[in-house]
Length: 399
Image (tube, rainbow, N blue to C red):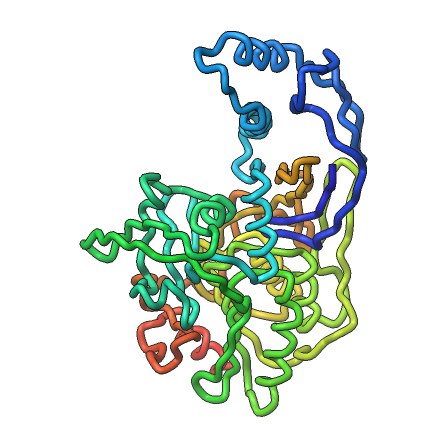
């Protein structure tokens, strides 16, 4: 098995070859007890009933051409699902490969930015210029109700990625809710390179930077946005609305640009406490800063917003955030599939967890509709209806 650290938010992608972790059957030569081969603790897992069920299906199921690979994947899926943790997920080899490409900002899909809730439908928060989604007419504020025939209410970001992305040239059918209208779309997937950071100047020389997710290129893209936009800027707005999270390393780097000393955050798990400390590059240690957040700001986005708030470095404007205080790791199995599993909890520098309760903004402002949010990819549309961004600009103007 290969193990990669990932927070969904993600974390630094760290691949360690340590042999196949047993616990899911791969053939019929199963021992009755299989040890977990890992870095935390050794426990014995009774796989007798799994083995018996597999043999029964192979021997007695009405169709003889049973796909043993699907049986194996199904057994793993069942074990992961039995944890009752919405953030512990099993991915097939193809799904995991697409997920890794997505982390790298490189994928085959339609080119939409999405925000998620546990009870509602994903909302489009922007489209990539020139993408199939933009060409098909999808808009900011559209809700994706179905992918194909599947209702996706309450779907996670990773599950949506696996459903919407696919091979280049193939089509994906979406059912869109736009106001009172329900609209069908059939969109052809294409190769897309998506920036995770976009920036512009708004108001009175205020640098606006939006991070859509914390991917493999975010640290570099964010530093580039600061270097290009800070000269001549009087203040800054960091927009983390709708950001589902990403790599821990990127969260560390973003915090470090604004905070010069101390702890960024810490994680706690079976192996103890790991304190993440501020790094060495501080491009914006003094510029007045406001961070925009909403109910779909999650995980790594909450790490950044919460740490900047605790350090007294920024005010938060918007609504209470998602409340995801857990860390996942990617355990890559021998067939290329992946067990994306919760292994730690994370805490702010003051020792507080935001899990299941979120961050509370310093200034609470609601957005009337998702489509009112400023779209930095289409700056000509302006931000007159974006009540949260305007509140941030007023706060900065008042010092």
